[in-house]
Image (cartoon, rainbow, N blue to C red; front, top):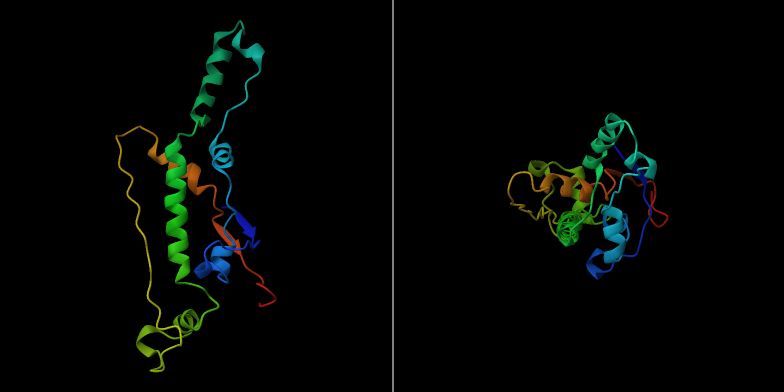
Length: 161
């Protein structure tokens, strides 16, 4: 599990600004930068290709499972997952009265005073990935999801604990 300390970046959309969950996501990269992040080319010494022992050459073939040459659809998948994350986090800004009330009061015991920003309404976006068996859907998702840390620790945000 990859755990990182929060490093905040200015959100692009005004409605995402001031939301530490969104601002702690990794910063945007160019298309080329994303393709580099998703690529993996296992190293192989040139002398292995001409090695006299075929068992040694065959052993190196196992590294082919680690090879990742991303296709343009990787970027599309990344954008869909990033949008889904931001959509979900947009309703969960821990600094809003709505989220504070949701976190502190069970739904059936919440006070009758509605927060200025309204009661919590969960937002979610779904993603459907369809394709034939063995075409790399799972590998692509693993590559894309590994771009995002699994846990982001927030100790303080703009001076707030």
